[in-house]
Image (cartoon, rainbow, N blue to C red):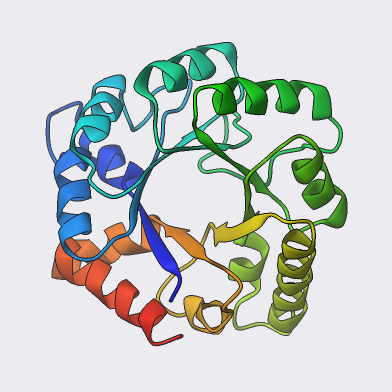
Length: 240
């Protein structure tokens, strides 16, 4: 079955709303692992709107599975990643004005800059993933700059779920999965996935990992983090 990466950013968002100490995303990560999560994901943003440097340091000390740091390809974030040494770094686009990540990283038009960031991370033994749209030029560029994985942006599919455009977006994702594999890339997927739209994707054996945050944290408000993670694990284990 596909692995599940649980993104704890939204736990930190609740905490930062009051600038207090709870709920603690580090504690949430530990509970998610106990419930069966295969990885913990966090995004250290330039404006520190949710995850803080303290969180990342503690997550590196306490995560027992696989720590995936989402980050912009900036000098500051590259320095932090090289110091903290996550198991994986996922390069993502970042704009201060956005509520959440709005699209994939533009690799095809910036191969030199992205390639240098990839190389600096890999020199430290950090696995590098690129969060990109399921477009052939971006997937090919991800391979050319030395990425180990691509995480395909599932936002368009999630937004189209339950509409006539759903199958079209699913087919576009599948074409991206096939191309990535043909090029020798490992393929993950994420963004906007929930307990309903994951079911079709969970049946795609070629996708090795799904990274999900908001829907799990939202579900956890009602049933607790352990149950919320278990429910998602069961959906992936059962292929949807």
